[in-house]
Image 1 (tube, helix red, strand yellow):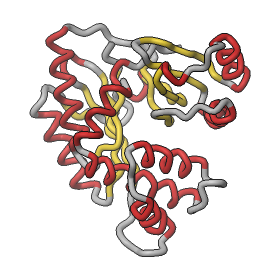
Image 2 (cartoon, one colour):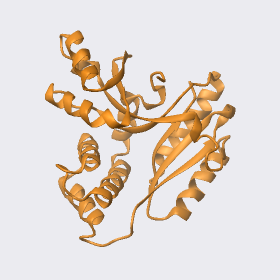
Image 3 (spheres, one colour):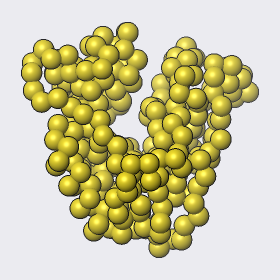
Length: 240
């Protein structure tokens, strides 16, 4: 199983989210809309919608915004259809990157992604060029301050629920699961009275690539620009 995801550190990402909350509202609205498009507007029966709503609440997105996004997804108030698109790319130092977009305009999204990559030492790849280097997993993150006193019992409970790996590092807990076990593990955490800070299905590198500090700085700058783009929902890399 792959190692801890250094590029999805919730503490660092929380600070960025707080600094540009309106942009985060736009991104989470799209995630809610596409989840409602695919599985309906009831979070009790649509697990993906429940996850998207929980994420939006983590940045204090207003209830009205959430309800509008759901209505858009179910077709109750019209509007352009949101599409989920993945772009494969090579980043600085030959690193592999998958970029996930949620957009109502694929031409705009691909043009923006190409521009950001080209200006920051990256290039677009063809379909299948880097996807084979990754596996899709359920990933759940929260701060160590939320851990119960009895960690052994906690770890046993989530492993029995289907967790494959539990990492505790730098005041952050990261749990990885197979896709089919993701919902069960998340529900077990709720039963234990614990809310995740970030969770979802992600593409995790099968093997990490060692990089220099110079390349690390270039990738950080590239990812900062991707996060600023409203169409980019997430990104994944094999950079270690």
